[in-house]
Image (cartoon, rainbow, N blue to C red; front, top):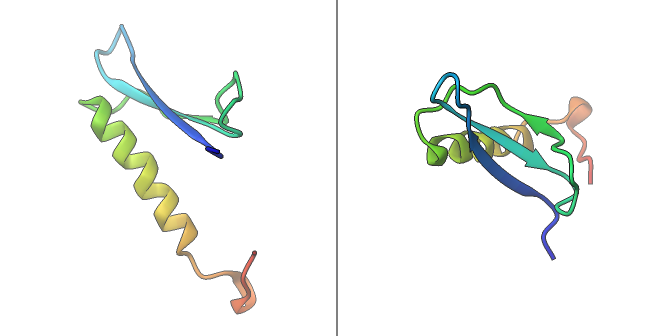
Length: 67
């Protein structure tokens, strides 16, 4: 079962792509939407994934684990 969903869209006015992060995966409204700043849909997806990886690997205050 998927816990989250990433979708991309093309902003008609700028011609650039944005990414939408849905949590939980079956949500009808995005949890986060980026600004339309990407040249391709793949670049938008890759940026969301990279951002999540950075956040997941950030040291927790006090050296603890949030899990």
